Length: 78
Image 1 (spheres, rainbow, N blue to C red):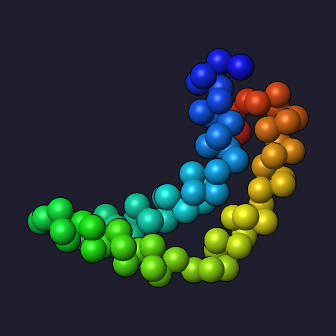
Image 2 (image 1 turned 90 degrees about the vertical axis):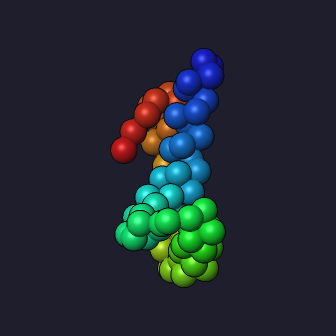
């Protein structure tokens, strides 16, 4: 499998990539940060405030996503 395909498959099967990073990014970037310390604090708070139900749903969705990757022979999907 070409390296680029491995990356795509990994993104399709990694709950952080398909469910969580976009939420964290939106929360962290909701306000401008004037320092690295401010950005670090926002990232820490966003992680601490992640909804456990959302995390559970992302993990519960994993078998369906695995089936989709297999059906597409490792291809990308959304």
